[in-house]
Every structure is written in structure tokens, then in C-alpha cells.
Image 1 (cartoon, rainbow, N blue to C red):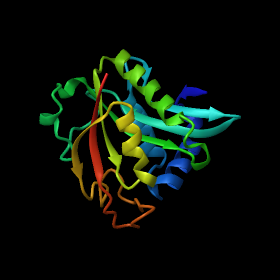
Image 2: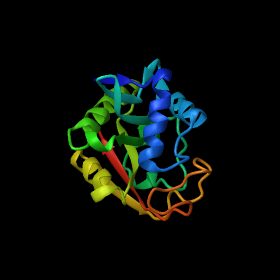
Image 3: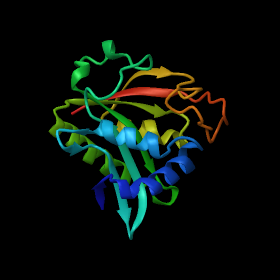
Length: 183
């Protein structure tokens, strides 16, 4: 079942996020900030997948005009006004639930919410080193187009100051593939 992310899901989302992406990826404050950025006009663009009372995955998404277009973004290559672009921050699925379409269902829910909020596209930074490059493959399958590759995207960022990458440790050199999905 795909549901809007609410406060009662926070502990499970933090636990799964830190397990999959590395310690320090999410905490109560950062998750609350993300959820706040995902709400616009009373519409929440962040979702969870629940089966048998267990969190199977989550999608964190920022509403258009509620996120910072920073040095890791290339809006001049998007071909669409940045005021109309939401941000797909994170899609995470538990290892034993992968390959069942949960990530796609979560993405569809966020796209529907973003459209209701007035967005016409979403951009994301996909983890190139995800297992079997599944993040980029899944987003490409959904219609995402590669804009630019950004090496060292998650190395010593203010957004995740205590982040320890599951592959690189505290000095992350993983690449982010900036991708755009037009709805």
C-alpha cells in the first residue's frame, strides 16, 4: 500500500534510509525538513510503501520552488523553467522487496502529487554506484534523461555532514547522475 509519509513513519524511514545509504543519511530533523519541502498547497509529495505493517520503501520529494537549485544542478540544460521542477530526493526500497515494482509505484505517487502542486517535471541525482546501477536504470525506464554526471556529489556536504557512505566510508566519491523527468 502506498501512503503519504507521516510522522508515525519517521523512525522506520530513518532506519531503512541509514541502512541502505549509510549512517547519518537521515535523522529526525533532516527528515522533517524534507517532508516540509515536499508539502505544497496541502499536498504531500513524500510517500511510503507498507506491507503487513512493515515499511518496504519510501520516496522523498520536494515540491517545485521549495528546494535550492545548487551547484549540483544544471537548469540551463533542463529545457524547462526551474520554477516548474520538483526534486526527487530519494527513493529507497528494502533489499528483500526490490524488483517488485515498489520503487515505480512510489515514483508514480510522487509524480501525481507534484502535478497537483503545479510542477511539470522533476529532477534527481541518482546514485550511479547503487547495486547494479539500479537507480539510474530505474529512473531511465521511467522516462528520465541524463543531464550531467557529478562526481563526489555526497562528499562532505552540509546537507549530510555526518554521512558515511556504505561503499566509500566517510570520504564518499560516488557519482550522481543528474536526470530530468518531464511529466
